[in-house]
Length: 564
Image (spheres, rainbow, N blue to C red):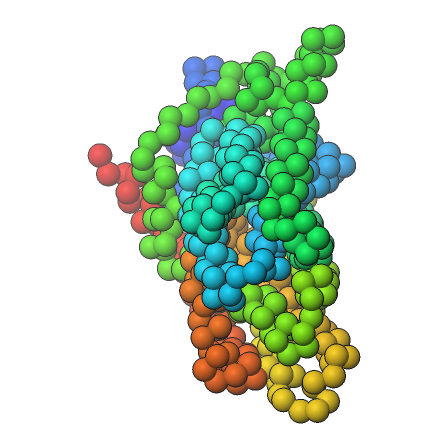
C-alpha cells in the first residue's frame, strides 16, 4: 500500500470523530479512503501510515482514537489483500534455516578455538577476550548498514571480511598476528546474529516472531555442539591453523548460498516482499537467472527507495543505551550471558586439571552444552508464542476489539503489556539457572567420589541445565529487544550483542581470577547467588515499569520530531 503521512489524514480523522462521537465503534472505510487516495496519487514513495502512526499511537491520541485508526488501517490492508509478508510459512522456514546456518559462524568461531594449542590458560583467555570485545563492536557497524542498505548487502560484506581474516589466520606466524586478525575475524562475523534478527522481524509479525526467533537461535547455537569436538580433533591432529582453514572453506560455501538464494527483506526496500527490486544487491542470483528466461509480472512495479547513510545512523544504537526500558532488557541479557560464558570459558581449564582430559575429550564435553542451547531456545519459542497470543486475546477482550483484529507489529499500542507477555515465565527460569550454577560449584568439592572420571557426567548434566536455562532467557530477551524497536531489528540486536559481549569480555578473566583465588566451588556458588540478586530485580522492574518507560521514550521521540 502506498504511503500516507499523518497530516493528510487529519480531515478524515475529524470526519471520523463526527461520525462516531465518543463511542468505541470503528470508522467506515470510506471515511479514510479519500485522504488515502489523494496521498497515494501525489506521494507514491512515502512510508506507510502505520509507520507514521507508530510514534503517534498512544501519545497524542486517546484510546478510542488509536483503536479507531488501527482498525481502519487493518481493514484497508485486508481489503487490499496485503498480508504482513508475502512469503508463506515454508519460505519463511527456509529463510530462517539459511540465516541460521550463517549465524552458526559467530559461535563456531569462538567455540572451535576453545581447545588450546600449547599456550597458557591466561593467553588463551586473552584471545577469547579480544574476540568478544570486537564481537560486541562489529554489529554496531554492520547492523546500521543492514537497517539502511539491506540485509543481503550486509551479509555479503561481513562474510567477505570474515573470510579474508580466516585466510590470514591460517598462515599466522605469531601470536601478534593471531590477536590482530582474531579481532578482524570477530568484526566481520559478529554481525550475522543481528542481521538475522532483522530478517526475522522483516518477515514475521510478533505472533510468529517468538517461534521463528527460537528456531534461528537454536540453529545458530547448534555450533556449540559440534565445534569443540571438531576443534579438538583438528587441533590435535593437524594443528590450530587447520581450524581457520576449515572455517574459510565452510564460510565460503555459506556466502555462495547467500548470494544464490537469499532475497532482500528490508521493508523499506522491498515492503512486504511484493515490491520489485533489481540487481544482485537485492535479488538472489537464482532469481536473476530465472528472469533471463521467464517474464514475471507478479510483483508490484515500484521503485526502490534509496536511503542515505549519515554518521548519526551509526550512533543510533548507542543512543538506545539512554532509554530506561532498554537498559533493563540489556542488563538482564548481559548478566545471564556473562554467567554462561564464565561456565563455558573455564570448562577446558577445569576438566583438564581435575581429570587430565585430552583436547578431543574436552571438545566432546561441550556436546551437552551445545545440545541444551538448541533445546532451550526451541522451548522458549513455543512458550513465547503462546504467551503473546494469550496476552493479545486478553487485551482485545478488555478493550472490546473483535477476535479478527490484530495488534499491528509497527504500532504496538502504548498500553499493550509486551514486557509482561515476554517475561511471564522468566522468573522460574532464573531460579533454575541459579540453582544449576550453585550445584555446579558444589560438584567441584574435592572428595574421593568427585575425583573419579565418571563424575564428569554429573558436571555435564549440570552444564546442560545451565546452558538450557540461560539460552531460554537469551531467546526471550532477544525477542523483547526487537519488540521495543520495530523496524530496527538489526540495530536493536546489535546493541544487545554489544552489551552482552563487552560484559562477558571482563567476566571470563574475572572468573579465572576467582577460581585461582578461592577455588571453583565457592566461585560458582557465589555466581549462582548473583544470578538471583542481579536478575530478579531487573525482571521485576521491566514488568512493572517497562511499559511506562516505553511510553515516556515514545513521547520524548515525538518531542524531538516536533522541534524545528
